[in-house]
Each structure stands twice: as structure tokens, then as C-alpha cells.
Length: 457
Image (cartoon, rainbow, N blue to C red):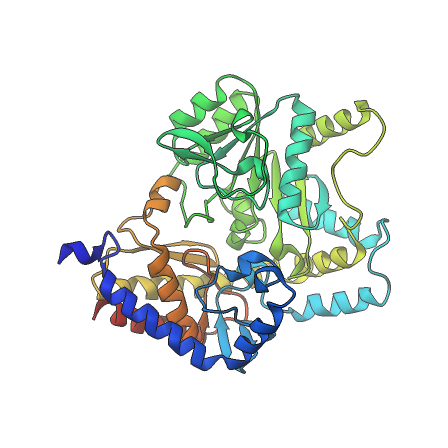
């Protein structure tokens, strides 16, 4: 009966509940050591995990990691998992890449942090400028910090207070971006804990791919910057319409606003991210998780014009702490890791095979979805792909959110995990790394097809 279906996903609610229940029971049976460690951790860790969102997986209790190498993760019970999550991009070049591990080991013996620069800093700056086409750079420990610092710099440099983002965006835990469109009105996200300021006073939000709304939001002339992913990846994948970024960049420039592109996920597009792969011309770029091969670090680069304005603002300010940066920003260990990653991993020779393998994965997903007659779609950005519960790729955040079905996502993710395949717990995102094999892709596709059979039987 139609009333039992979740549309547009096309899956029976009753069948979904049966599959989910069976998979939870199977997980409990397969993972006794993870269960014991989770019980132990719960004695002294809030929510039983180092950070509460580690409970966002579909598992009845957290899976406990023993080892991670290349494209494989080994859990506490000895299961070898084909890893397509890869630390939600932090391990985009595989777990513990040998060149990065060697550089980190060597640097650890020479010093971890000193609040002073060394040769690696100069080399990393040169490599970033070469890859991304922006001449001047600064560093942080996370992309969240980098985005926060960029907003501070741009507000200081422009004298403007307002930020513009796209609906459904996520740029780390930067409070300013947690504003959504609800019924066409900007609303501070209810889930944002402890925020006492009215973010809607200084944050504007429009739908991605909506040029008219973008122009209207820029028209007052008070927007310091537009902060965006070149492809939205955190509410499900939302690709730009053909010509969108050309027109959007012209509008942004016309209104005297700066464009900041957050490439933390879309750097999967190539050595210079989506920015260089598609000829975009941002005023600033933010990079995070994958830049250090798994070592916490981030960077942000400015155009010469923006850097000059930022330096001028700093020199004109009263003496004292700027509120930008921490004592560990740009530490010696992170610099060594970034130098190794940029020199040996962020190259065309490494990205090329990753893109081919991801296309192989995306096409395999499409074929199995079509074989089951489901109204789902698959999108790809470089080494990253995602399936969504809608017949056509969404054009903006509201459409992407409407296509989500958390219960279905969790059942699928848990089914895959029980068969030795790990994908990202947030929506249905998958990533391939240099060590991802044809066999691992086949394992994922077979498990995915089995899941679809179980859900549609």
C-alpha cells in the first residue's frame, strides 16, 4: 500500500524496520569487544565517546578502532573493514600515508612545537601558492578555526559585519553559519547549543544556485564575504548549475564583497581543489582535514589585495591579541605533515587513479539502483561520491534536505558495516583513496546490492 512507503525513497516502512532490527542484532553479536570497551568508556566519557558526535553512527554502541592502514580499518573484534569514510576526509590519502608518517616521525624527534617558524613553513607556503593560485597564507589547527579566522580578518579588512552563506551549509563549528531558511525566512538553527547571540542579525542565507536571491542579499552593500563550498557536500551533495559560479563571482565582485571558498571536502577534485580544476577565482580559500595526511592542521590563503587589506587592518588596530590564531597554530609537526602531503600526495599522479576509481564506484552504484527500480541518484566530485534518495540531483539545500531519510540511511549504513564496509555516517558519502582497490569497490557494491535486495524484497 502506498501509505506504507517512504516517498520518494520507495522503501516500505515495515520492511525497513525489520531490516534495521535484524542488523542491530547482528552488530551486537559480531562486536563483543567493542561493546565491552564502549561500556568501559561510558564510565568517564560524556556520551561514552571522546566527542558526542561519535555516537552519530547507526551502531547500537560505538565501533572501537584497533588499527587503520591505507584503505582498511581493523576494529577491536578483528574485523577488517573496507574504509570509504576515511575519517570524513581527514584520511583522504589513506590512513597513515608512509611519506607523512615518516615526516612526522622524523620531526617528532626534532621538536613538536615552538611558536616559531622553520624551513617547512616556507616550503608549505610556496606549495600552497603554486597549487591554489593565492599568494599569501596563514595556518590553523582545523578548518573550523581557519573559517573563523578568515571571517575575523574580512570583517576587520572591510569594516562590514555581515556574512552570506548558502542554505544547508556547514563550515565546521563556526557559529555564524548556523542559520537556515525555514519557509523562506532566516532562522537560527535550533540544534546550536549555548549560543546567546542573534546570528540572523549578521548572517544572511540564500539557496545555492539562486542567482536572483544572491544578488538581492548582496544589494545593500554590507556583506563582508560570501563563504561557500564550491559544491555543497554537508547536506548531501549539491552541484552548481552550469554557469552558476561564473555569474555568482561577477555579482559578488560587483557589490564589493569577497568570496571565500571552503575546499575542505572539495579538494577531492585535484591538487588545487575544485578552485583550480574549474577555474574559479576566489579571494580566499580554506583547507582543512586532508592537508596534513591525518595530522590536525588547516590553512587559509588570501589574494594579494585581500592580504594587503588584512595587514593594513592589523597595523591600524590597537596593540594586543587579535583574537586570531592559537599557540599551536602552525606548529612544527603540522608543518612537516603538510610539507609531506603537498609534496608527495597532492599531485596529479595521485589524484588521477582516485578519480577513475571513484567513477567506477559511482557508476556501479547507479547500475544497482537502476536494477532495483529505485528513484535515487548518484553525484560525484573528484574522489568523492554520494547517493541520494531523489530521482534527480538536488539544486539547493532545501531539496537536498527533503530527500534525506535518516532511518533509511542508518539501516543502509549498518547493513554495509556488518558486511565489512564503512561509509561516512552523515548522509551517504563515500571517498576513495590511493590504496582503494577494485576488490574493495566490488565488496561495497555487492554489499550495497544485498542491502537493496533486503529492503525491497
